[in-house]
Image (tube, rainbow, N blue to C red; front, side):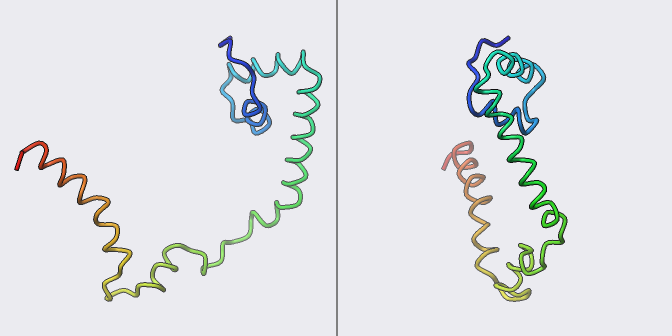
Length: 107
């Protein structure tokens, strides 16, 4: 046992099945001795099941091509035409390496 208190985040992660085995066991023990928290977790599970039931058919639908990021970028900046988006990404990669080189090699 880690000795950390059980938080609301732990309860949510427990419902989602996102806890490691050790923390899962700790939360299970906590729920066995805490009726209030156990009732909340049961309510969260019912809510999750209702959402899956209501939204499940939508989740398996194909994503419309108008929402595809590559299509959105292409529509705003057609091929062959220099685009702001491509130029804008350059500083993200260029400047850290350039500054690193300056720091390493000196002026």
